[in-house]
Length: 329
Image 1 (tube, helix red, strand yellow):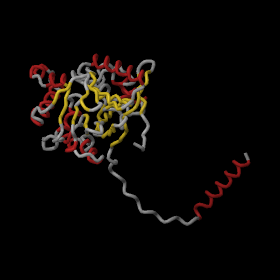
Image 2: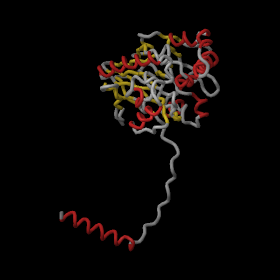
Image 3: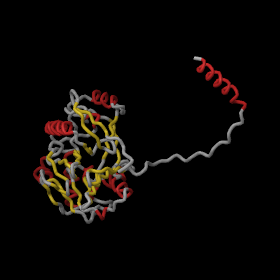
Image 4: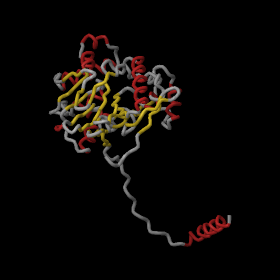
């Protein structure tokens, strides 16, 4: 008690004397930075190195139709519970550059240079961040695509519409290729978003790449140690991957879920971007039951950067536990 009183008296005296002290000379203001450092993060899976390279973040107002089977107010409450703004959604994008030791592999390519221009740099950052991470697009051996939504394939082309990875073989899911390159399926697609998806697919693969792709099948390695896994629902050919090296592995879930605060926590919620929402939910639950049981690391394309962690089963859903940032590779 006496110690506290003495401290209080000393502090009071110091405050009283403060106006009598000569003011220190003002220091020159430091210019305020207007950019983040390039966003990339590296970790190892056995002998392979995974480089998570941000493509940026898209933020837009929360709408009634973002979650198809839940009212907007309930979605807002879930966002607020996760300490996020309740009236808007921010979706992150995280393509990968995987160095297997023998091959340099890009897994999904982000929103592309057109989106970079139209969003004033908020998305479409993959090419710039990849270069900042020390990778030359001309040195990429393989580009592996998980599915054909624009935020995964638009980065296949550069600003002039030419292949962004000129020396790479482009691998695509056989089921996805069969569906989206079918003229009949395109003619039956609903107007609006789905027609736009088809048009983007044709622009990238017909006009840009001249159909120079290699379809791959589920259940087989598409690159050294990279196993393609069927996770349909988000799209007809949606694919995830297991990267293995030695005894170590990570599950690369692509778009099994979107914003984890919504769709990991509430696996029964149906996202507007899921082509078959019921199948997507079934796939999500099956995948997360497996990840929780095996305690396997998971890398998510739309998880908060650097988009890697673990899935824990809860009473009525799941919880994403982010892995801590490690300053050492």
